[in-house]
Image (tube, rainbow, N blue to C red; front, side, top):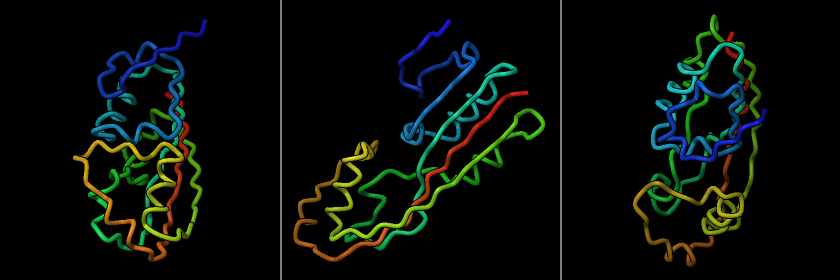
Length: 151
């Protein structure tokens, strides 16, 4: 049987009911990513598989305003990997690194919107001033793919 459950993962409590949990580029929008991952890995039953992917920035040219005011913080992949008890889980991970140059800060933010990463859980900031800033911006980021199977 396949049962799908569509819910806000920050409020979901029954991870132990599922044999396969997957998230493609979405769990990093949690209000507390590491608390969420702790709840998931501590509640799944033996044989359960968790397959997730999420981004994290490595380097980014300074935006005219602090980047933390414009985009969400992304999880540090090393912290998640250290969280996993290797005696309880089979862990496989893959990291892909991307480097992009954008014509302006606004073009960078538009690219986040195109991939669905424009949603922010922070207080909204006005960014109209970015239209005047035509400085190129370099962004280096990684996408972490993590496979876990509870032993």
